[in-house]
Length: 328
Image (cartoon, rainbow, N blue to C red; front, side, top):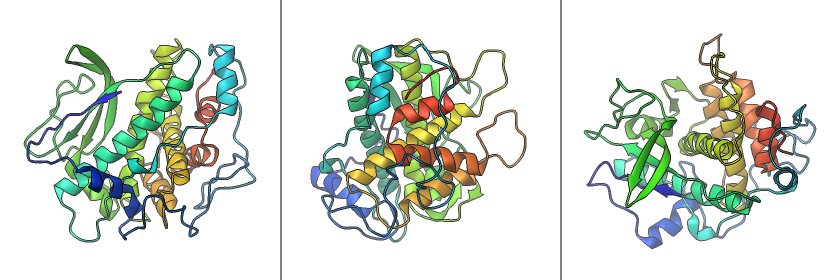
């Protein structure tokens, strides 16, 4: 479950007919076909072998690694992870900006909101199908001009529309109508609007298109979902207290973004170079040198995304990137 925060009162919600048409624009700068159409033949489908690749097309040769030791997930949950892919939502949950000219704040805002809604629907259906699992919850802010946000993860910083990062903060919570939401996704709108032109947090991406913004958004949502999995099943965190930050904390989020891209493919939402655009966006913000806040090298981030894209299985992400936990 997510709660919607509209930080800019002038931004409008899409009418139902417009929402249905959103994803049909195919997450690229060119127009698209109807939401019910088949996936485009101009790019590769997810690989049935479950391989991954750092190139533009899913590999049918490389195999993902497996967790070396059993984790604390219940046995029936492990069995579920071994066999289940994410469910597909209906085609009426389509999204896409359809932008071919000057991007407006309304267009960018509604695009990001549509991605948030679609990813939330996918993960909610998945969690509710896990034995003993329940609907995850979080809340989000798309930060617009003149309406900054605060976060316990950055207590001394006002998060403005041009803040050069996006993040999920598990330390934030908010109560709305008696319901408490745990975990906060923050997306600065001006910063995301630059992604339409290949500027990914001030780093250039080789391929340009709006699916870059979609994948970065899905990455932050995945952080929230892995946090929910950890709390629902009392799993050990990837980042251990007192230890250096583990890059696998971000690689598993990249993998989760790929799982969502797999779902989007099978719903007929992708076209053209979308997969390459998303992969290149993550590669653009990969580590190029040693860091105290590692996120993975460009190749590692691309491989993580493709593992999720090729398998469509959150369990494959867990086994590969969550130490001591077996996901299948």
